[in-house]
Image (cartoon, rainbow, N blue to C red; front, side):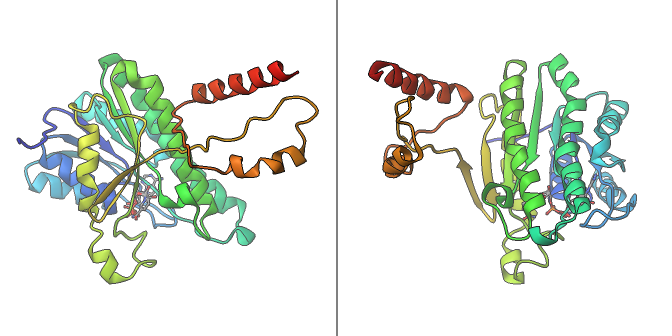
Length: 305
Ligand code: NAD
């Protein structure tokens, strides 16, 4: 099988000065893409800024014969990042929303600033970059987006309620972009990666980190954003250390109750086992799936009245 190439395509990688973003930038440049290496260059807590992080990666790409330009804006100014791509390369094909920071603190001690900054970088930042890329994607009937969630968002994580809220937001955001973008050949997927980086350096043992190279996340992203992917969109993948798996929502068959004055808390408690019974699961993919159930419930209500 020939290798997946990205010649003549422009990839914007946010937070590409280190960790996963750097691995994406080096990979896509090595496969022929023009790369915008965006990085604010601050600390992992979102303090400060510097041009160095992006410059180091751009220089590494150029030294290897690749094409890259730096951008030092915060992702909150997404339009400037996309503009860098247009100015330098005349187009944008792929957006990897990857930039991120942490402000871990227990909920009891959470300050508004810790909450606001995390939401600003992860939620508003991904929105602003995608929003600026969207008209280009629609016009050229081509675009690929990866947004970055986290296991902390999917499952919750002690001391990370701000980060969890921000990261799960990327699931709903991506699934809607996938639905709106499909007819314009815009594919949007979301990953929950795990990789050794400055973010995980202090929370995982070194022997585990050895096996969690950012490089092991990159190939899945390449598959999802390649032009040959014309179907996989609105999907969630966990990826890291050589393990790749798709996740989806599962709904219990559930209980149907008559919609009259017998629908009491006590009636629900009587059917509690059914509410929680996953032996006949369903896998909903959109609000319409719920409407079908609602119609069934309403029919039952009216038949029995
Ligand atoms: P990292 O700290 O190495 O990289 C993040 C990069 O984003 C940094 O270079 C940082 O300077 C940059 N950045 C931060 N705020 C920015 C802003 N406002 N504008 C532009 N750039 C900014 O961390 P990483 O582990 O490589 O994380 C990459 C992404 O993956 C993040 O979104 C993170 O939340 C997510 N993630 C990582 C892991 C993991 O195991 N490493 C797990 C789950 C999710």
